[in-house]
Length: 198
Image 1 (cartoon, helix red, strand yellow):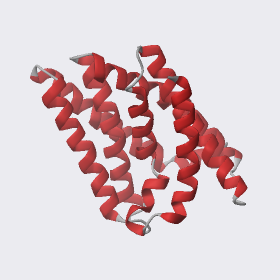
Image 2 (cartoon, rainbow, N blue to C red; image 1 turned 120 degrees about the vertical axis):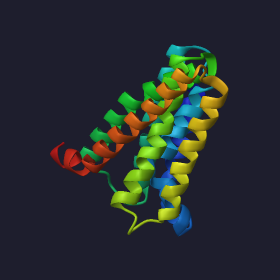
Image 3 (cartoon, rainbow, N blue to C red; image 1 turned 180 degrees about the horizontal axis):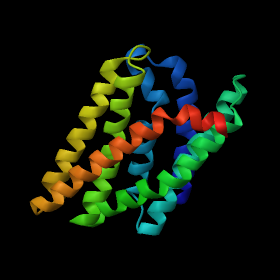
């Protein structure tokens, strides 16, 4: 399982570096999006047989995506700053296990844990979409960010309909989504300052 996480992470990290040049303008943010990286970690972790393996898989995917991205950019002549490496490395180590465990909970549990797992990944997608519209819509395609928000909302609705019963659990999923989205916008909008301090 961990071999799959490492291989997927490295391959997609390299593709991310090149995708920034290859993708059309309307899809260009896909190659530079935390949402797509988070979904990759989440989807790979869905395959994990146990919670601990899922958490480790989520972290492994994100760390290896960062490694693949940095190595590919280095080979293309685009070095990465130490601040970028520390910031995104810390994000991978903190968010990766949470995404992985959330995927495991969503697949294998109902109720509170499923609400936290589904709400977490939905919140990342919606939060980054809101950030994109608020801060970088003038330099990227707003339709991409709206699309990411819709994907996050559809995912939340599907999880709520299939895994979150009674209604109090669905409310917890919605509150988790909102909390993660707000935290994401706050952290991401201050990310440049944090990187410059590292």
